[in-house]
Image (cartoon, rainbow, N blue to C red):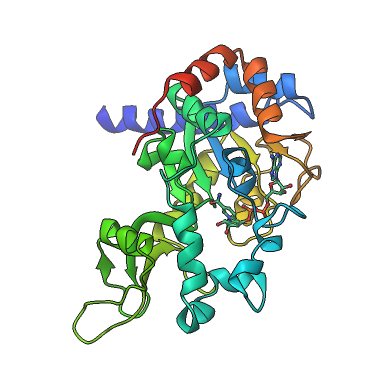
Length: 299
Ligand code: CNA
C-alpha cells in the first residue's frame, strides 16, 4: 500500500508538472505570464547577473561607459578581464584586492527592489532556486535563504588558498583586505595567495552550481534578470530549461536565445521598471514596497 501510494504521488507529481508546462502557456505578454506565475507556477527558477545590482550602485561589466570594464584605468591592467584572471592575480594580486575592498557585502551597497522581488517569490512559496552570477552578496542581504541561492561565481562568505585550497577564515580575510594586505596561506610551507572564494577565469565553479541539472527539470517558469548571458556555463541554464517552460526576460537588451521560443516574454527596460511592472501585474506591488522599506539588510 505504501509503495502504491508513493508511486501514485510520483506519477501525479510528474503529470501535474507536465500539464502545467504544456497547457495554457502564455505567449509574449507580461500580464499573461504574471497571471500564469500568480495562479499556476510553483517552481520559479531565477537567473540573475550584474544588471540586477546596478541600481544598488555596483556597476556591471559590459554596459558601455558605466560598466566596470570601461572604468578600471586606476588599476593599470593589461586588459580589463585581468582583474578576475588567476594567472594575473598570481603576478599582481593588488588590483583585485582593492576592487574586493570596494565590493565587500554590507560595506556600502544595499539590495534593491529586484533582490526583494526574489525574496517575495520565495515567501510566496514559488521559488525553486535563484542562480546568480553576482558576487556582491545582495541576495543574502535581502534575506533570501542560502538553500534557495546558488552563487555560481562564488562570493565573499568564504575564502581559501589558491594553491593548496585550504579554507581560511572569511572574517580575517576581510580584515586583511580592508587593511590593504596581501594574504598568504599559513598551511605548512604553502604560502599561496588567499582570496575570497570568487570564481576567477580559469577556476572551477562551486559544486553547488551543478544542482541546476535537476532544477531545470522541475522549473515551470524561468525569469532571467540583468545579465548579458555571455558567460558560460552559467548562461547555458537558460537553454537547458525545457522548451515548453515559459521564460521571462527583464533586461535592457535582448540576450541569449530569448525570442526564439514560443513561450518567451521579453520586457526590455530598466530593471526597476521591469520589476515594478511585474510586481503590479502579480498584485504584489504593495507587499514588495513594504518589504523593501521595512527590511534591515541581513548581515
Ligand atoms: P554583464 O555582462 O555586465 O551584463 C549585464 C546586463 O545587464 C547587460 O545586458 C545590461 O544591458 C543589463 N543591465 C545593466 N544595468 C541594467 C539596468 N539598470 N536595467 C536593465 N538592464 C540592465 O553582466 P553578467 O552578470 O551577465 O556577466 C557575468 C559576470 C559579471 C559575472 O562573472 C559576475 O561575477 C560579474 N559581475 C558581477 C557584479 C556584481 O556582483 N554585482 C558586478 C560586475 C560584474
